[in-house]
Each structure stands twice: as C-alpha cells, then as structure tokens.
Amino acid sequence: MVVHGLYVIKGRYYADFPDPCLMSNKGGRPFYYCVEDKDGLLWMIPISSKVEKYEAAIMAAAKAKGYSSMQAYLKALIEADSGLSMDIKNKPPKE
Image 1 (cartoon, one colour):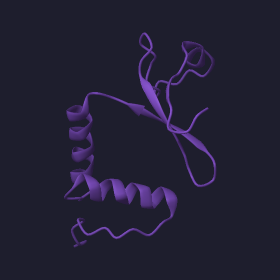
Image 2 (cartoon, one colour):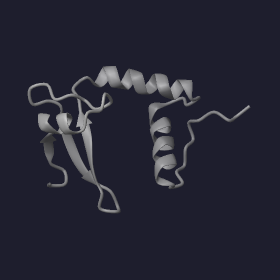
Image 3 (cartoon, one colour):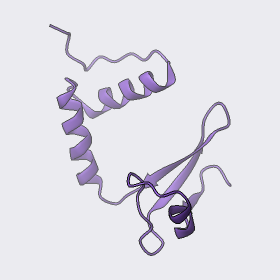
Image 4 (cartoon, helix red, strand yellow):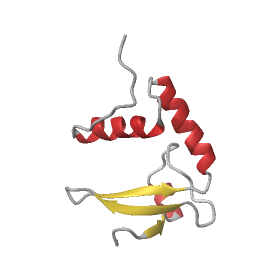
C-alpha cells in the first residue's frame, strides 16, 4: 500500500469480514485515503462528498458533549485516543 494513496475496498473483504458499521462497497465506492501513524500502522479513512451531512452530525455530537466548535471536539477526540496533550480553548468550563 502507498501512504497518501486512494483505495477502494473490494467486495470480497465485506464477505470475509461482515460488519454493519463498515461503509458498504457500492459499485467501486467509497474511496479510502491511506495514512500512516507514528507507529507505522496504516489507517484507511473514508472519503465522502457529503460534507454538509457529516459536518452537521459532527457538530450535533460536539454540542451534545458541551463543545462550542467542531475543531475543539475533534481535538478532544484525538487527544483522548492518542494520549497527547492539546490546548483546547473552545470547551466551556465544567459547572
């Protein structure tokens, strides 16, 4: 695999590893973008043209968790998963 390459997951993968949470292969879609983390693990990130749909879903989740911006929410998710300390200024103080 090439890092920063675009890929389509073959239908055979879905047959071998059935999972209702995976995005299904619909005639050569979706495309995935390959990135590599600091440990050499390759991640396949789904790409979508439905920006407004996913932006609205992320904002709804951010507001439900008390964040005032999508960026602050995503930084918090990255911090929680990676263990890195990030400066997040958009979360309101806990009451």
